Image (cartoon, rainbow, N blue to C red; front, top):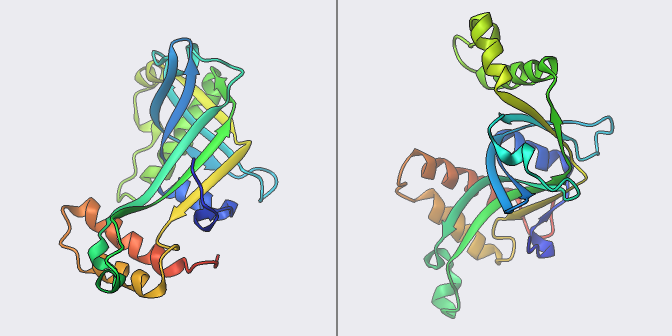
Length: 222
């Protein structure tokens, strides 16, 4: 990933927070026929060392070739995408002064690397599915639990998936949130995003999140 120094994010806690807020990851692996990309919800778990990159856990359909057709010597690349939004040059006050402005796109992302490990143990798989379910159901008024499903049905469903785990060897974070712009232009981006007529609820959420990110990320500050 192209990463100018002013966009680099190196704090493990900040990267983990994005991974937890946006858990649907893109896992890129090398197969016998070339690159494969799969979109899998993953949980990030802290390692024994709080500063360690951590561990990713999830599961895939047994029919998915991500686990059965992979070049084991090559690490997987896992991509987490956070808030993002188009940035109009009309929002930059410097447009009036020089006209030397162009559109761009602000975004946050994390790239994590590690070997793809497989789990066929039904106990491990059930524990992972239970943990993932509890995490996503916790905010609902009547949370669904794995144990709510009939035992025979659940056994069949769990038999149709394979557990996956990636001990992260390294992470790269990129927060491209207007740090390369002078203060008046950053203020213009905040004003422009705040005054948008959003396309839909997702666009509104991205614009609001980007406003906060631009505010919090002054150039040279962490």
